[in-house]
Length: 180
Image 1 (cartoon, rainbow, N blue to C red):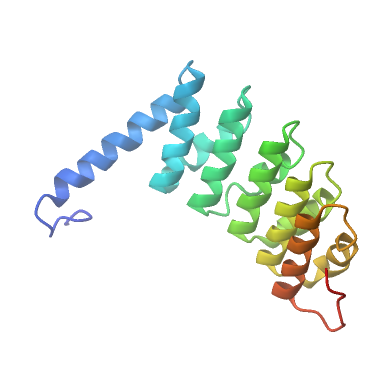
Image 2 (tube, rainbow, N blue to C red):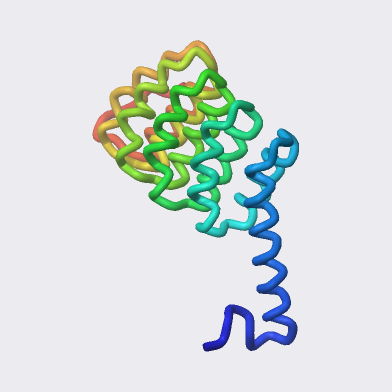
């Protein structure tokens, strides 16, 4: 059976190189060095290999915020359903950067299980988290999010109001929504 890229000259060597890179980054993710772990999480997201999902889920519990937010972002890039529940738990992380990345990842994945937790995040103290939660709800597109998004149109942060409006446009509504 031919491997991926085997018909392309040098394809097997490229596959071997990607395989080595994957394993190197997976090992780095378990490293005692903070810089190696966040760089590995970042690289694993770029690679998009689903074999990195479980190690990245474990990285959501890393003691360092840089690793957690990069892991959340990487899981959104890989776009699998498996990390939805761990990402939902990350919406409660102490770091607003992790909460924001988790909201982004959940919106990218688009799993309806994230709708209620994302609605809860619309009350976050940080505008960037509220903004990303609104965008995520718009991408998921479940009508249940309409009323909470309408309430967000009165948010003190203009970026949040604009994100809520765009999300409502994405979801669609039967009634007139005031302009922001």
